[in-house]
Every structure is written in structure tokens, then in C-alpha cells.
Amino acid sequence: IFCNFAKNIPAMKRYFLILFAVVMAAAAAVAQEPVRWRMNVKMTSETEGIVTLRAIIDEGWHMYSTNIPEGGPRPTQISFEGSKGVKFTDKLKVGTAPTEVDDPMFEMKLSWWAANVTFTRKFKLTDPDGAKINAAVSFMACNDMNCMPPKNVNLSYEFNK
Image 1 (cartoon, rainbow, N blue to C red):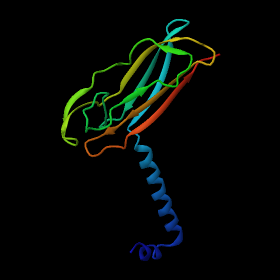
Image 2: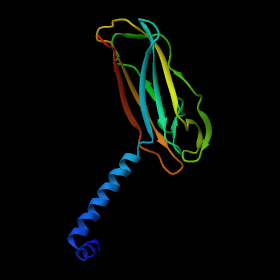
Image 3: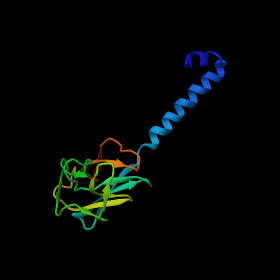
């Protein structure tokens, strides 16, 4: 059917139709990033600091918390393995408690964040030359209609030598 339809469209219009379809597909792919991550490092003294990870969550979407029951969606997980020249001096802290809801999609009680959320962790520099903080984030985001596949994001910060 499409081939017969395409034969009846002049060549120039056909090219514009194809170009329009490609542009719309690219725009849809960009729009499918409902959670974006940022990392900031703030030194509180010459040897101590705080690393902050911020999840920027689009309106209408939510990201699952760090504590999810078995059989549910992928929980948010943050690992600082692979960091060099730093020692973390406390556990990861969450800026806002997640909301607990009865999730109809997974048919269980779950907790999530439906707005931007920050995660912080204190550290101490142990070897400033070549020090680097690596953060590996694993998470899953959904809206009222569907879920994105679980995603992994890697963030890093290199200290000045």
C-alpha cells in the first residue's frame, strides 16, 4: 500500500516526507530521556568535600527508589567503585524521601521520586595527584503509560593536579 502511495507523490515531496519522518523520529528519541543526571563536587576544606549527584526528572515521570521489593522494577543504585585517591567517609544520603504508592503497573507497594532528587556523600582526599570520583548509576523510570528500559549512567570528576 505504501509503495503505491509513494508512486503517486512527486519526487521532491517524497524526499520532504522522508526527511520529516527522520526528524520526527530523532525528536522522539531525544524526548525519551525522562531522567538526566548531573554530578557536582564541592570541597569543604583542602582535603575534604562532598559529591552530589542530582537526578533531574521530567514532569509526569518517576524514578524508583533504592529499596524495591523483589519482583518489582529495578531500584536506583549508585556505586562509587573505581574512584581513585579518595576515601568516602559516610554512607550515601538522599535529599528527599521517596513517595510510597500502590503501583498498578507492578501490582505492589513501591516507592519513587516524581521530582528532582539529590544524593550526597562526603569524602576525604587520600592522594590528590590523579584523584578521581567515578559514579555508576543504575535506575528505571516510568510514567502512567509505560516504563523505559533500565538504564546505566557513568559520571566522573577529576581533581586538578
